[in-house]
Structures are given as C-alpha cells and as structure tokens.
Length: 444
Ligand code: PLP
Image (cartoon, rainbow, N blue to C red; front, top):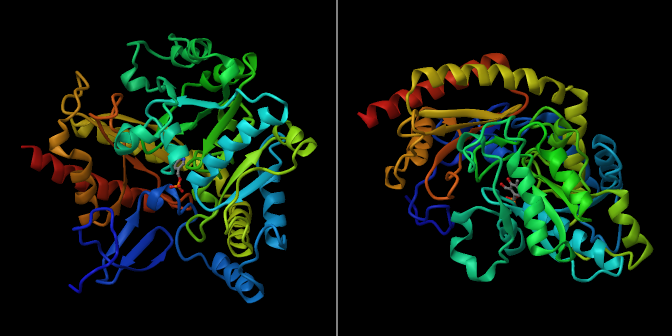
C-alpha cells in the first residue's frame, strides 16, 4: 500500500476505496458491493448516482458554480429558499444557507441570541439542550451537544449547556413508563429554566429523534407539545435540530410535524443535499426574522461558500426529486415494514435490547442481558464489532449511542435511502441477520 497522507477516522485503518454508487448500493475498487443501510451518515436520502441530480449539477456548472453571497444572489439560491419555505410547515419562511449541519446549528443559535438583542434584551444568551444529544462538531454546536464522548477532549473550551434528561424511554432516568409518566423528562425543562433564570436563556434546542448520541430515540407523543408550551410560557425560542430528520427521513418533511409542533428556528442539513453537495440551512420563522428586519437587517453568520449557486442547484434538484417521485409519503409504510422485521430479530438474538425509531430512522440497542438491560462493557467494543461484521458482509450501518451516561451503551442506526424497495429491505435484513449470527458466535 502506498503511503497515505489522508487523515482517516482511525489513522492506522485501511478503508476500502469507493469506486461508484447506484441506488442503495456502493461498489469499491475491488468490486465489492455494499448495501448502504445507513445512507452514509443518514445523508444519501435518495440513493446514489441519480441522473436527475447529475444533470442539474452539470447544468449549473455550465453557468456558474460560485458567486459570493454579499455580491450576488443567484436563481438557484432564490428558488431553493422558496422551495424550502413551501415544503416546510407554518411560517418557517426564511432560509440562511450554510455548508454543514454544525454550521446550521451555529447559525440557529446565533439567530436566537440576535432575536433577543434586536428586541433590546442582551442577557438572553444561553441555549439549553439535553444530555444524550448531538448538534455538531464545531465548538458552539458541541457546547449544545450532550454527547459526552465528543465533548470530552474540549470540555474546558465549551459552554455547559445541556441541562435536561433525554426522552430515553428504554432507560428512563426516572424509572417511569410512557405515557403514564406524563413525559416527566419534558417537564424537567421548566425546573431548569427556573433554576437558571429565563432572563439568561435565548432558546432550547432538541433533535426530534436523537441520532448519533442515542441511536434513533424518538420522543413520546406529547413530548414536544409540552416543551414548546414551556418555552412559550418563559419567553424562550424553540430550535428543532432537524439536520438528520429533515426532508422526509421520518415520514414527513420535518419530523416535528409528527409531534404537531412548529419550531421558531430549524437547523437542516444532510438530506438537503442528500450527499450530492455540501449544503445546510438555518430556517427562521416570521416571528424570529421580524425584529432582525426591523433592526440591524443582518443575520450575524455566514461562510464564504454560503448559498453558492452550485450547492443550491443540487439541493433544489434533490427536493424536486423527492416531490416528483412522492418519496416522503412512502417512508412510513417502508419504515413500519423494516421495523417489523427488526422486531422479529429481537426474538432471535438475546443481545438485542431495544428496537426503536421513526420512519426510516430506526435504532437497535445491544445489551449483555436483555432482562436487566445491562450494557456490554466498553472493552467489548460491541458496536464497532457489529459494524465491522456487517461491512464484511456488504452492509453499512451507522454507529450511535453510548447509553444514558454517555459512556456505557451500544447501538446502531439503520437508515437506508428513502428510495429503498421492499426487496432491498428484505436483503438488508438478511445481511443484518448474518452479521448478528456472526456476532453471536463471537460471544460464545
Ligand atoms: N445535528 C444533528 C442532529 C446531527 O446528526 C449532525 C451530524 O450528525 C449535526 C447536527 C452536524 O452535522 P454535520 O456533521 O453536517 O456538521
């Protein structure tokens, strides 16, 4: 092997080299085929090699790929902003384009702080969040993230924002059960606000379905209504981090629609470009933009490549493709089918503790003892082993979750492209079964 200069996730790891992709499959340079059961990092929502997107990419590249956002606007950026406003609920009409989910969260956070400043209130600067959450890798977004593993090295540089427990029903921190618990974990926000003081809090942020930190943990039905009401009662904005869930992953354009809640600000990413271009956005409601428009008129964020015509044209083509092929309306039934097969695996393998999630964002949590929900020891590296076995067999799944304490816990996310067919779901589950069987043998 030639010397490499590429910094890979594990520096001494040899990764397969990818050659091309088509639909739900990826092919490496050795000719090995992988079923993309995770859409990469829950991103390739319409699958690989879609010709409509490639054509849109070429068309835009022939015209212009880059203009600087404070010198020019572009047809593709304007059209994309309009499309996003049309596709999302309520009056979430204003789009600020960035290049990654982390940047979208940073921008959402800054918009929230600025909203209060424009109203003459300068003390409301904290953005509360939850433990067992992930909002991004940049220091602002990491400050909001209750992902202890990713925070660990940088704790001294971070704000200590996460304050409340997650709606992790499988490991309820109160030992209660939903729905009789009355979503005690949501009610906790009220106490946290009172302790900190609403005068200091700009917003509260949450993922509708907890992804990387938890393994597809969906909140109970009444959870976000309670959260939104508490936010309103205390004059605090509600930010939904829909970087992973946005644009159909859970069966609606925004996952929050399934909780019947319209956030004040939304962070979007991943599925917006579906892996065809780096693009993300912070989406603001009329309420949030109004004092900014009446005040300084500048949202204090932005990156060199924000709203570049190339990424915007690609994202527009992705969103049009979703609409044209009625992809999102099929997600619920595909997800239900996949979940029903995963539930059958739970009966077959004693190390499966929980199957959960929404739409095509499903999670499997692994435990040493299903009766007591005892996690495997860290040293056993269960998530890593299962992911490696699946990859060997030609199936990609996404690592997630480190339990309620952020340290002990193993889970994976299964989130294939939303375009997956029933036959491909069957194939995914067969490959997963093989991988679990191989892991069972290792346990003996
Ligand atoms: N927010 C959520 C919910 C995410 O899942 C992620 C990434 O996994 C991010 C933010 C950060 O996005 P990015 O990796 O594009 O910076």
